[in-house]
Length: 255
Image 1 (cartoon, rainbow, N blue to C red):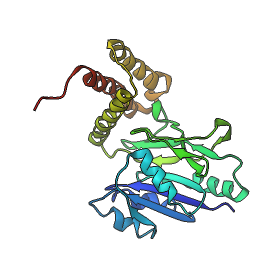
Image 2: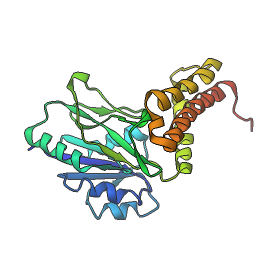
Image 3: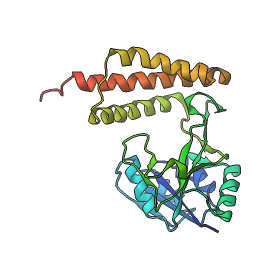
């Protein structure tokens, strides 16, 4: 049977890390890389594995690549602290490893729990994540936000049916905090990449995003939570381009 290492990066995730690690307690090897938690994250993690290390924050992709490099096995399952492996996905992964993977990496659907319900609509679903892979050929890129696994042909990527369960936001205020943080990173990355923004981006992209989320991808089926997600996804797009415009049209304050 192919052995599996689970790798998780953390910082101040004491509320989440126990449930995440419990969901992968069946794995052959569990690696936790913390970037300086000031809560009890490390203490909780050590209840599940002695493979806990501290590494200075290097960015999402770089931190996950570092964690994968510490794995004892070639096959790696990357999990975030606010995620869980569902029982159906655990069984599917077990069967896959038992028989021997026929691909070099696998995408896994992710379902988010939000405002009391599982969301299977909008841009949030199925939200395929490439998280199970052979680390000898696949690598995390170094993007500052929305990092992903690269260096692998699409023909070598399979798809699983079981879901990763995502508990991203405990309340709307934490959702807004994340939007603010991620749009700043996204705007900085677009600027570094030479991306330009004009009034057309600010006027046209947000409404297109809302229609896609609420109508085309069925956000209306999830009631008020679906509407809120559609609106906040729209706000994300507007804010990302607004911050890029700000960077391009304002100068740093003089001392």
